[in-house]
Structures are given as C-alpha cells and as structure tokens.
Length: 208
Ligand code: AP5
Ligand code: MG
Image (cartoon, rainbow, N blue to C red; front, side, top):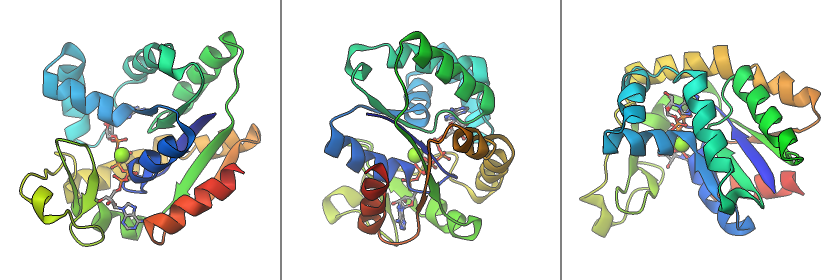
C-alpha cells in the first residue's frame, strides 16, 4: 500500500498516520519529522532547513526530493509507505511520479484531510509532543498523561505568527496538488473535524 496524506498544518496528518501505519504495517515517512531530526542533530541538511521551518516557509524542492528519493529506496519502503507532508508542491509530486514509475509501482490513494483554517490555529498552538516517544498531544483536546506532562515540548514553528505563514504556504503551494491528484483519479477527501477515532474510521473507509 502506497498512500499520501495531504492537508493543512494541524489537520491531523501525524496523529492519523501513526494509527494507519500500525494498521497496515507500512513505514511512516514524515518529511517534517526527518527535517526536525536533522535540525536537532545539526547536520548540513538541518542547518539549511532550520530558517525556512522556523519562518513557516517550505524547504526548497531539490533538497526535499533528494531526501525522499533516498528514503523510499530503503528496504522497509519496498512493500509500501505512508508519506506525510510530502509531496507539498507540484514539482515534488512530479518527481515522486517519476521515481515510482522508474520502479514500476503505483500510488494507491492520496488522502486529503480537510480542516477549516479557523480551527487550525487552536490545534497548532495547543500541540505538545513527547520527545521520548514522538507521541502527539494537545493541551485541550488530548492532554498528556501526568507521567508525560512534565517532559512534553512545543515545536519552534508552532507560534501564531508561523502558523499564518504555514497556512499561506499550504494554500499557495500545496493546494494545487488537489486537482493534480484528482486528475489521476487518486484523491480521496476526508473530513478531519471530529474525534481522532472518527477521523481514523473515515480514512479506513476511504481506503476501502
Ligand atoms: P510538517 O511537520 O509536515 O508540518 P505541517 O504540514 O505544518 O503539519 P503539522 O505536523 O503541523 O500538522 P499535522 O497535520 O501533522 O497535525 P497533528 O497530527 O500533529 O512540516 C513542518 C515544516 O517542515 C514545513 O513548514 C516546512 O518548512 C518543512 N517541510 C516538511 N515537509 C516539506 C516538504 N515536503 N517540502 C518543503 N518543506 C517541507 O495534529 C495537530 C494538533 O491537533 C495536535 O495537537 C493533535 O493532538 C491535535 N489533533 C489531531 N487530530 C485532532 C482532532 N481530530 N481533533 C482535535 N484535535 C486534533
Ligand atoms: Mg505532522
């Protein structure tokens, strides 16, 4: 199974991806997580990406495309994968199509998680994550348990200012992927508003 999650910042891509990969036994490939790991490790990639990410801007296509090509060539991704946060521009989608057709494999579905902009800021500014397990929480909607609450962290780009820029990047640069994948007959729209369990069931139903 080869699936893509598209959606605005805070739509629940990471939350839902963790559940779906467990269900289907495929690796979760999040370019955001890969970039944050590179920033934390201080690698040349991380040094290059840090400023773009903090400002809520997209990292240049050539950097991201190389990173994903290498990742999907690894053994664990041969049988399938869930891409979370990639592709995010039409050139990224075209590069992915090229790489997959060279391997003679196809995408199964592209899931668009739809959440209106007015809900996004609250989701983003309340997000916390456990640095030890990567589990995502929300101060209001999904508070961390007491034993975890003392160590949760907030992302550097989860400020109101950066969220406005991230939403702008989504509408300008990522939304054109909707007609792109609609044209390929792959797009499935999923309502991302409701409890995380309800959203998971909608995704599973959309995947058939
Ligand atoms: P990335 O990490 O991909 O961030 P994003 O797309 O902005 O998405 P988020 O991770 O913020 O949100 P999410 O949809 O995963 O939501 P989550 O499940 O956490 O990218 C970060 C940056 O890296 C980019 O800005 C860019 O600079 C760079 N980058 C990455 N990929 C790139 C690419 N391909 N090209 C160029 N640059 C790239 O949920 C959010 C919150 O809501 C949580 O607190 C959660 O608990 C809560 N929540 C989840 N579901 C629900 C629900 N159903 N109801 C209520 N609350 C919920
Ligand atoms: Mg995420």
